[in-house]
Image (cartoon, rainbow, N blue to C red):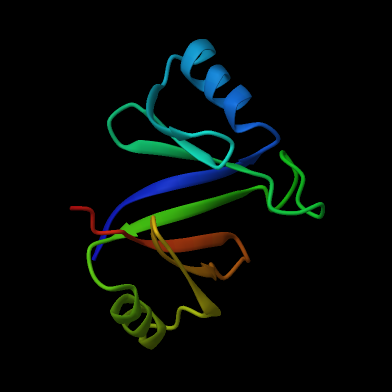
Length: 122
């Protein structure tokens, strides 16, 4: 089941973006891992993930520099199977990291999304 969401923005400097979002916009800093990524919260329900630019073809502010992440509370492979049966087409590779597992897909207009199964800590 989808448990919430996150808009991922690709930025030229994570630290400079953290300063802007927390000081100028007064959003709450949730976590900050140097230039790897950071998360800020806007209000009660919106989080923004700040990540370094992915590649030269998607500079910050250009098409492809934002994605919507949907948190899930089930194993990523089960979610992929369930959503695929409903017509969602996922990229073939699931990214598995210490922070969790990510499965990328697009809506019918090509807008980028990903499912995120958070890592189990503790």
